[in-house]
Length: 137
Image (tube, rainbow, N blue to C red; front, side, top):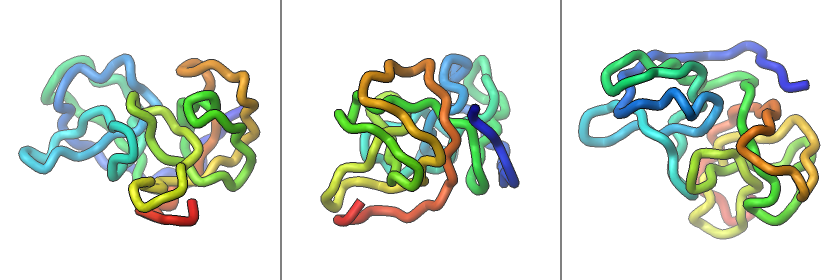
């Protein structure tokens, strides 16, 4: 069962309709500061907590603590175990961070997820660590 604990959140303007992306990684746009769905290996701003239905609406983003997170083990092709370094997939899902300098580790898994798990329905607990790019993820 996924949990949330000691969340640190901020509210920013949504860049678009994000109501289908609750508990996924988001980025903060450099042009206007609004939050948008994260892409693969992007520098993750945080994890979207609510469902803003249009651009300009308040997007509550977890930037610290333990959050619920939509995840998919099969994207990375390997299972997740507690402590696994996490990065964003191309659609904002938490996946096992790849090795190499392009993986931006935003958190660590607190749950177990097998390689047969199909996303985006699976919700895990993730500790937000903002470790950044690493070659030893």
